[in-house]
Every structure is written in structure tokens, then in C-alpha cells.
Image (cartoon, rainbow, N blue to C red; front, side):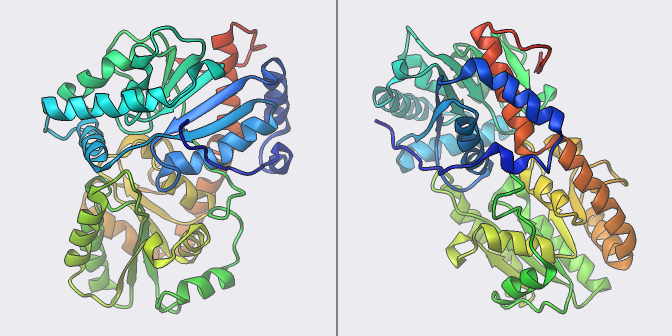
Length: 422
């Protein structure tokens, strides 16, 4: 069997004061016809990245709603994850196609993982992202409803790479994308659009006092009396940490006391991460006011929370972004947010109202300077951003969407509850 992830327990009732009573009642109603249904989530890794963070909340909340839910992790080795990283880059527009050998490696590992998966044990199988997408090819006759959830930016894919995956995606009963723009022009049985969400009660997002945040940040050698800019993301070219460093250098000419933290996580399914971490360190060129940190420096969820709460401005200078949960996290903490005008970020930030959208190093630096120069106006935008997240991007809403889809696939009456199908 594929390894099982222990997600612990969560209670829907704990979220009642954070979302509307109407939403909580809707979740309860939608869950009633699904009691005892068996659900399997399958992904490439149990840590690092948005998929893992979502599942550590979504899976136990599905269970609390009455479903019998598991989360399993596929097996992979370096040769497989090197191919899936190339697929990830290709789906986000990189020009390189997959070789015949790479396609064979991808198919072989998916088939091996399928052999270790008891499909007939489940009513619903949820496959996350490209890595395990081809597992479905091994099940010509399927008992479960299969759902594929794509979490990245598919707006301008390398068609040669996407064409490798499309025959598998077409076999699914439903596929889910963050935005309409990501849905491929292909013959899919059901294409659904909804954004992801954050858990406001996770250690990364729970309320943290400024004093506690400063104490934690101080442990990493940062001068808590001086302004700090922070980007939280993987070390990945699409997150543009080198561009963040360039923007920081422009800000520093106006505010010499400013510091920069680049806080990331190293995931085992991202072999390029270490290479780009090294490039980022080299680009910092020994600047003592640039702090490059990761889970390898004991930066966990609470530490990320502290950096976000303590920072004068948070940056997510992505050049491609499926959605950008780090943006959601920053807005939820009512922090001024500067982010790339790409992907799902534009559904979160209303430029000039809830944050700053930027297209260049110069624009990023200008926004950060504006925040440092006028903290009251920055705070006003950040508070509006928090309310936007409360209404649209918290986990109970995501659970509700899944329950609607499960009921639709089962042919149940959803009682007027609906999701966007394109």
C-alpha cells in the first residue's frame, strides 16, 4: 500500500466564529448524504508546498464531516522527481519538451504506484498535481469517482508537455483548476474552477502577538528594531527570489536600515530547489542584512508566522503562480502585501485597495518604499485584505466546494448549492 499520512483530528465547530453561520449550516447539509463514503487523497509529498498544507486541514475536516478519508503518498526516486519538475516547469511555460526516456520514467513510476493502490476500496479518489496523474491509466475499470486537482498556473503551458498528460486527465470524472484561464481547451468530462484556501487555526496562521513574533524573529539574528521585508516561498525561479533581492537593494538606497528575509521550505519532490537556493545565496553576495532561511534552519510553521507578523511588508514577486497561498496568509495577518500581477494572486489583491500588484523589480521596490514611507495607508489596505480572505479563502469554504462536487458526482441533489463548472 502507498504510505499513509497521519493528519490528526480537527473539529468544524472550531471555525464557527470565523465564517458565517450560513456556510456552516450548508456544510452540514451537504455532508449528510455522504456519511461513511471512503475518500483517498494521493499526492507526491507530505511536506513543503501548498498541497501538503491544504491537506493537513482538509483531510481531517472531511473526516469530521462524516467521510472516511485517507491521504497517501506516492513513491518516487530522483529520476522520477527530476522528470516531474521538468513537467511542472513545462506546464508553467518552460520551452523544454520531455524526451522519450523521461516519458517512460514518468509512466513507469505511475504504474508502480498504481499497483500499490487499492482503488476498489474507495468511493472517491483525489489525485493532486501532475506527479501521480497517470496512475488512473492502470485502472481500466474503476469503482471510484476519480478527481484530478491541478494546483499550478496552466495559463500558458508548453503544449508538448501538456499533451503528455492530457490523455490521463481526460479519464478523470472531474478536474479542478484555480482559475478559468487555467482550464485547457480539451475535451474534459467535467472541468471545475475554485480557489484553494488557508486554515486560520493552523500554527502558521493562528493569532500571534507582535511581541511573540519579534522574540521568534530575533532568534535568527535579525535586528527587530529595524524594518524587515520578507518573502516566504520555495526557492524556485518562478518565485523570483533574485528579483526580490534586486528590489531590496533599491529600497535600501532609500531606507538604509532595511533588512530582507527569504524564507522557504525544501521539499523532496523539488530537486531543483537546492540549486536555486545556492543561486539565491550567491546573488545575496554576502550582504549581512539578507537572511536566507528554510526548514533546514529549523524554520517551521510558527517561525513563518512570526516572520509574516513582524515584517513591515511581505513580498511574493512571482512570475508564475497557480494561486499563491503565501499571499493569502499575509493578507489574513493584515500585513501589507506586494505581489506579482500573475495567476491566482490577482483574485486576492485588488491593486491599490487591498495590496500592491507589481510587474517588475522597480515596481516592487517602489511599492515597498511606499509602505515604509506611509505605514498608516499600508495598514488600511492590509485590513481590507484580511476581510477579503475571510469571505473567500478560508478552509470551510473549500470543504463546502468539495462536498458539492462529491454530491454532484454521486447524482445527489445539492439543494441549490453549486460550484463553477466550465
